[in-house]
Amino acid sequence: MGLFFGGGFEIMFFLVFALVIGVFLVTIVRGIGQWHKNNQSPRLTVDATVVAKRTNVSRHHHHNGAGHAGHTSTSTTYFVTFQVESGDRMELRMDGYQFGLLVEGDRGKLTFQGTRYLSFERT
Image 1 (spheres, rainbow, N blue to C red):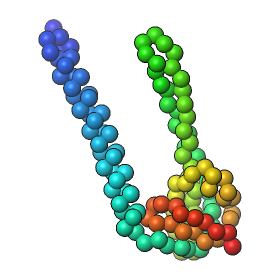
Image 2 (cartoon, one colour):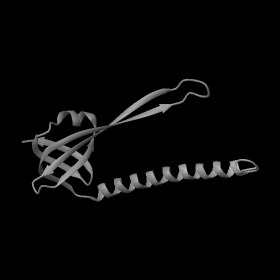
Image 3 (spheres, rainbow, N blue to C red):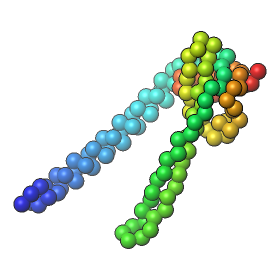
Image 4 (tube, rainbow, N blue to C red):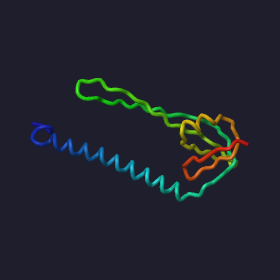
């Protein structure tokens, strides 16, 4: 009678569940790998200029159960692009407070470790 009768539903449910768990585990492993790589990288301080700022706003809808209205929350991720003396550019993620202190065109000393933003001192 089709895929969803006689055990087919259970197989599909298991496959979707396994896929979701797999994606979750890959995301965790990649995050731990990047964290470890950053920890192994040297802390560098270079002359840099703030050349761009951007935000990424994510919306999350939460359900409260069948037939009940949920609520929506948002989260914002902050990124700043720095240009170093060689002309290379790097985009680093940071918290909202640090993001708010920086203005495009600021020049100073950027300190970072791998892809981890540490500080920026204007000169």
